[in-house]
Length: 465
View 1 (spheres, rainbow, N blue to C red):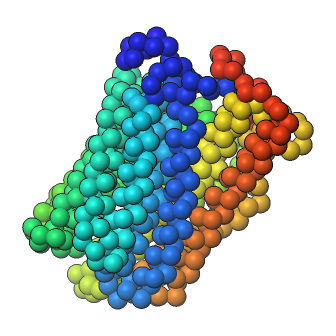
View 2: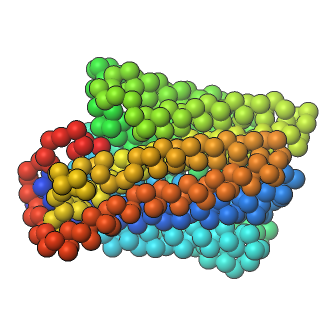
View 3: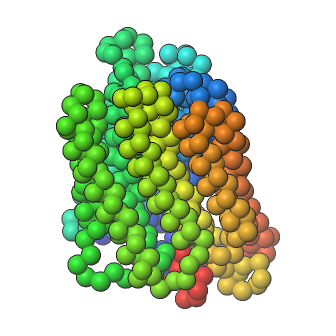
């Protein structure tokens, strides 16, 4: 029985009652995280379209409305949507407690989906009412998220990942309501919304919400995906979890209130946290017991974009005083690289996480064999050649966007948009076509659903993601 609901764990309000053997009792139904992740692919496609449209404006003024709209399609409809899916899936796994309510999870998805498309569309078309509606929907979504996650995140003694997710929820609330204030300013001119104030909100969103979410989830996923067991006393992950949000808050405060000393202190603390995150990754890579694979390439490339972003940000800061336009361009490229850190990680982890979730869903519907007639494996659920091609388009798209923004080259920005469109389409197709085919074949063969139970999934090289 669960203390929160008084019902057995597999019948708790936020869990998946018909899960197959081996799936933890607290996990939500696959439809919850998969809806977010599918929408993130669609968001990446529209983000690419927006960058193609904004290519000329980005070369002249990185803070122009078309550019802001493209950024919001990337941050809200792609990165936030994907990480919200990961949060709904792995918060119950990490804590061992189900979500408070599946209804709240679905409400979060619907309202965030509407918000993440209407808000940037309103900015792009200068329709203030549409923008305001997007801001209101985003507020509803984040409140629903916070309420839903309070139940599992009230768990104690769960380590760095839980602490990170608590920070992430706080960062999501802060970022969203700052965004709502900025939306209101577009209508009422409440305050002077200068570039450094807008950048301050970007720092909170990028590191105090999205970044710390990825860091916390990664601390749970890396040991599983790499089969890595770190020696006792490794604290880099814990250092990252505490210093990233604190540094982001101080940097944002310094930028927002034009307190140069506070901004530099915050940047230093944030750099320590991000460095600790990279040290934790290196420790997991060193102690992994799984040979190098495409997932590892994605993760290492993601870390490289973090370093590129730090270098561009430092260069932009130094250049800004003497060559303002070039400094702004470099700062814009830095934010694109930081976004690339999260996008590369999101796409790479999706090729592990989605098959893991889909495998459970197929097993629950009685699909037990793969295309070869052998027991169904995670590796059977997508084409690995297309996954490698996706790595290429993702990495090239991020690089092109950084070049386009940093060097004010519309052609490079347009190429980035095209590559992002291709990436979104390939990810969605590659991770869905085979599972749909297997499900259809299973229905035609009359396979029976698998009952829930405590038995572990069959041991094989393909069962562990």
